[in-house]
Image 1: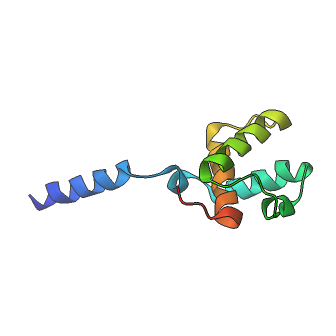
Image 2 (image 1 turned 45 degrees about the vertical axis):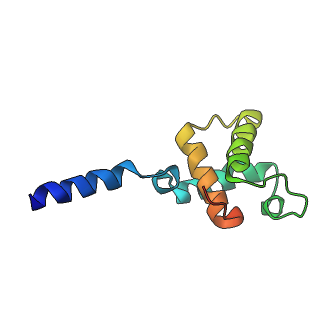
Length: 94
């Protein structure tokens, strides 16, 4: 019975993993440095007239930039960049 309870707890924990927990922030940093900084420096993330006011807006902007810059990131790479930017600059709750 105790083994069943432990197995259930483990499974339920695995089912609630969010994209933030699955993302590779170090990879996001690497991708951001290699790709995003070709067009702008980090000051864009902290400027006063920012257009990014939510986690969803950040995700949409990363997708927009990926499409327009021709980086052709996978969804996982986009998640990595979003999580890096959010953890480093924005601090939005998901």
